[in-house]
Image (tube, rainbow, N blue to C red):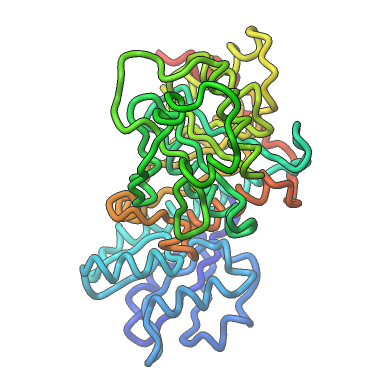
Amino acid sequence: MPDTRILLLGNAASDPLVKVLGRTGRVLTRIEGPEQLASVPPDQHVVVLDAAPAPRTLADMCREVRGQPALAEVPILAITATDDVEERIALLEAGADDVMIRPVDDRELDARVEALDLRHRRSRELRPSTFVATTRRPGRRLIVVYSPKGGVGTTTVTVNTALAIAARQPDQVAVVDFTPMGGHVATYLNLVPKLTLADLIRDSQGMISPEILRATYLTRHVSGVLLLAGSPAPGTQALMTGEEATRILDGVLAAIPTVIVDLGSHLDDRVMASIDAADDAVIVVTPDFPTLKSVHAFFEFLGQSGSKAAEPTVVVNETFALQTLTPGDIENALSRRVTIRIPYDPLLYLRAANQGTPVYSGAPTSQPARRFDQLAGLLLGEDAPASPPEQRRRGIAGIFGRN
């Protein structure tokens, strides 16, 4: 592995960090003010923010670093003198990837820099492929988000991607919550709908009027996203058949040009009908053995069932601080390219869920928000750089043949 290039923004008090950051195998560049950012050598791997010149704050410096095109995607480690939660959140919202609190332990600093460097190198191996923006219905796009393994973040991906698309298409995006065990999209958006999917199924057995749907069943979020909320309570029986799912989606598409559906993780006729009807099927995975095994089995099932599903868009949701599987491992296990990864950030996601403010709107300059924006662009057909496949070091047995 080539030397790790580290950029340190600090002052005289940052001298103790130099011993760790400048050790063998690393190339350290040190600056003291934002006016020097433009002259920083290219291809930095990690930025360490230790001090900000008055009257700027560390959060201000985070935003200035993110404003430099050459540093926009480089991971940032911010070092703060306080353990105040609001300050840490402010740093994360400003674009920091990790936050350390003084006093700094040399071993912890070394470990965190190594972890950020490794994640950054791996993320560059997962560059998205270029998508063609064709749809099955001219002028309409249906996107479904699904995973055969629960707890991987389908609702998080659905909500944030919808907000990113709505930023491009105001009032032209609807979210449909098809999760069967009590929908949570409304909670994530901090909405209290008067009517839900269950009401629509009960009230409308035939053709769904676009005008009535807009005026009665869709709840508008401040972002402009319109929501057809899921059933408010869990049940033991299927909420709808495959035919009902298709009818509802056709009705929403007649009213709203772009529709994104949270399918959850249960597999039934509702899910298969939705996937078969979709222009884009986003499959969410986490980098762990049980999820990869479930998704691999689901892909095999799709191939054997004669499904008409579009080629899946694989999104890796990094829900763990420590990543033990490489991009090559994940792609080899699934026999498919990964489109994009959503980086780990538990504090932002926890705050988003508890406050009903999605990461995309609550922390728009954060790394996760920017990845959701990239995913939205790819689904809409915006150009993205392609990269050659990574050499796969293990066979399928290397993943699924473990003892």
